[in-house]
Image 1 (spheres, rainbow, N blue to C red):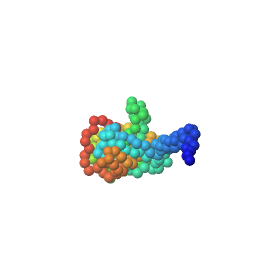
Image 2 (cartoon, rainbow, N blue to C red):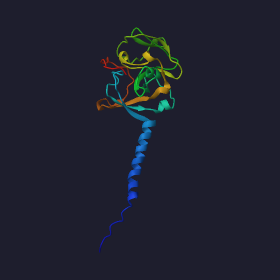
Image 3 (cartoon, rainbow, N blue to C red):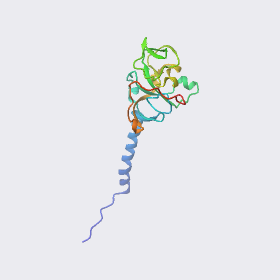
Length: 201
């Protein structure tokens, strides 16, 4: 008695079974990256000590797309504001800062502290006294005031003014690298002064 080998599936059928799931997976991954979440890395020391140089983070992109109001303390990633682009800043560069003022808030920097609506901002994520002053600024509609946690080495709203919400890319939610610092981006105030960075950002 002889056994017959099972018939081979046509080449195109086999190829389709292998390729279609792969293409679908790539399409879903690209859709998620475009619309929902994407990885980013930290190129500067402007957010020390909360975020260290070369940290890898995940940025969720739904809240800006859905125009969800952002809380004070939210860490945001955004496109270079037009005023920076006009001054020669890379228009493709993204910046990361913390929301310190929402529409209608009046903020100023005096005596080394950030003041919001006539009172010292609490919590304030600056780990050291600010070495500059900022005249009172009232945040207009559809704008935010953003600052780096490393206030004395941050290219932020105290230099170029309120950020249009149309420039938002997303909010930083999770640090995934290095593994020893894996976790959600904290909103509690820092307890140690940051090291002096070599660049602004």
